[in-house]
Length: 112
Image (tube, rainbow, N blue to C red; front, side, top):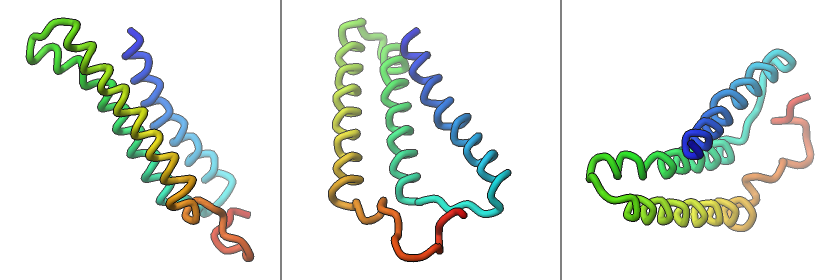
């Protein structure tokens, strides 16, 4: 039940919220600008988290393993997700922070 709730939350964030942002932003502004690097990094992390949450169930059904082994796979997936999140923070804050800063001096690329 918790797993289905988490997956539903991720997909609603991925599809519903993003779609509403595009729709309502398009109603107010004729042209919108987005940072493609940030969008790609965040969507990739959402995809990886969805895969990691879904992974233990098919693993348990296909290989017909005990609940203890499924719990080990689930914990490994959780550790993997924590490591990936730390890597994303390191990417955004240290190694490529210039990609995520707003460009100063000029109105090009900004939404009026």
